[in-house]
Length: 401
Image (cartoon, rainbow, N blue to C red):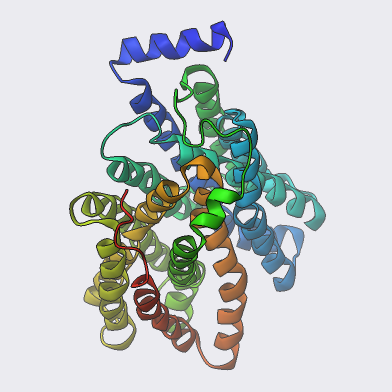
């Protein structure tokens, strides 16, 4: 950093009474909230884009697929680049880029433009996560799992609120008004560029560049962790995509009611990530991962098979809360296993696992639903948490954050 770029963070640390590590966590958590808020906006704007641009359902699906690819599957690439060059621009510019491109979808004159806007907006989402998760707790000496839970839960909360906030904005003022939602992202990017201290000892410090050797040395526990993330994400991302449609088409909910249930379910997941990080500090990450897979299934099964009313919805939310205990735990364990390539393993445990599950199971679930019903297709996914429990038993007991 130049001398000028050091002065403002130092002044912010003194004025706010925060340690440099805590200031970094606060700024990156705020950025994470808006990054994930923007990543959830397409689902709200998609029906309006279909009408405005006269898109086919295939084209609408391609927009969703492009967002998954650009925002999730490319995260290991950005993890590699951020581990190699360690420039804070990866995380600092991302909220502005994601906010501007995704929120500008209402101005797209055609499908090709919409596809390009989704791609570049997704790139902003993707570039943030590896470095953001590697730096969020790097300046904190104690309770890293707890603080990682704060960082991740703010993002999940942004994703949860996205359907509600964007639907209110575009319903009141039209789809073009969504561009106003980019303003907070631009402001957060400005704050990150001017105030965020670079960690003195960021995870990965001391490495001359990217090195596969540390990853090969821990490939077995990383593979077990990734398998668990993939199975959890298969349930979470597919439910996020289809839950509102299922409630509306097969359970008779209005679209407004279905959207509120989806927001409730996703908000419970945000709380679950925070709780899971704290439980990991007390009981250890392996126990939390196993308990998450084991105890989430009965509550979700209650929703699908026993109760279609308020208690069933509460059980679904509780199941989602327990299922998402593992998000911060997986990231912290992966970073501890390969601290010199923290950005890369963070990307594997977050975006790539999420995106790979979405690319496979969103279209597969839709195809199964066409042959049977959404109820059958979504309930079929409940086989994955028990499978995740069985696989996660092979995690090393000594792996602790």
